Length: 639
Image (cartoon, rainbow, N blue to C red):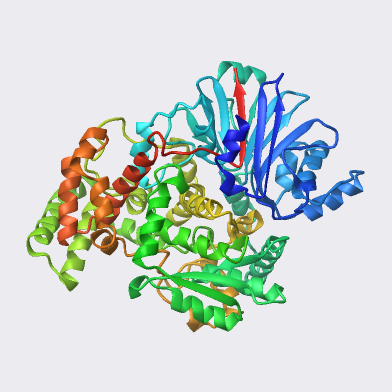
């Protein structure tokens, strides 16, 4: 069965495969390998520790493994190969599991079978770059890097979890620990799940153990705040990022970087090029629609830094091809429309390299999102108006703005004004600053689209932790780092890249950089109405200010235009009223009305429709004979 599971995720590891079985214990470990370091068989997995106690399957990279190897060698350990996997196993033997994880710098999801104690340990990296699903299905415990692996097992009994669908409609993603299937969960970042024989027998999950948490990093930052000057902070961040980039340049295969021309990716590429003897291979995606096109800026930065740059402009043919691939890439419903150019960018890069560095996480770590300061200003204004009055005003404002838009189809300033009025009506009922943040960063559509099932569950623990952090801006950054970043950004990048056998690395997510950022005062992140002040200063050492200073675009796409144009037939098939009514998830009449309004241009329902469309596309892929299954590191335990 492990072979079937690993075959389903061959894309995550096309270079090698392996299975290890302990029939007496009822344990099977399977692995697919994308060879990056030590391309020989000495890096083959599953791998046993030298003393025979542990068996490991591991997806990811440990960037400081050479340093750890030297420390272990000094303690008497010898190594037959040069892989980070072997170093990790030696670390488990020498220091124990938790201590070894705390010493590691890297991204990973792994399963470790302790043959002596008969315990299975599952764990993920600190922020959640690498995925790990797990759960029981028909009495068998399954786990894997992607749901495809679990689906390939004959005991798979996937049933849609309506509570997770409700989460998806609100957030356009399904947050950890939830999964679209009942009984299956995502392991949360920075945690260890250890299952004993008794746990397998009872099918009750033990409590997770944390080896690192952002909450602890925030608290430590408050205890030991940055004491240096502004220039000292610039030099320290430059040093930390340069070290992170340098460690992530270690590979035995071709390596490059994504480049948008924005602050984050330009900083990473600048530090890469500084440490490389040859021009770094960089890649960007462009659009014909000027308001969405960053390719020109990326090309300018690439020319200034002297990289070997490649760009690709999206056309309707490439767009429609990628659209059909999305359900198979993401396994769960996922509705961040930037998944489209992300997959195209990964395909482009994979033609030349096997590893690509990215500039992700700069916004969450250094305060780059516009909604941080915008939400703070808005709450300062809203909180002066009594909540009952705001709740009474909201419906009237919404109705008025929608009625005018639908009847007169306004253009220009009037259209923009009516949109602002509509948006304001959505946030007026906010009962607290964090409630406002939630409304600003999730779907504001409160119409009952879902026909059945409970509402989305709230994470009261996370909210309580966030409330303990002083300042709304810091609370929003905290929430984005523990939720939006791992559940959206990192999911989007990992699945798209691994679908084409490309490994991505994210230097800004080095935990030492993250911990440093939480020591900084607000003034080193926000100045003159802009975020990422400190990160900008590092970039200005390598790229002229005027080349990168411009309004933030993000990796967005002209979704509304695409839905009315090249994707129109595809959309109409997915949200056909007869089909929606038969499947029974959504209010087919409401969705049909919105589609007609969107097609006519009366109302832009692009984002709301995209969420439904992505669910429908995913649902269609799950029908017998269509869906697949697999995961880079997979295991089954049958009781």
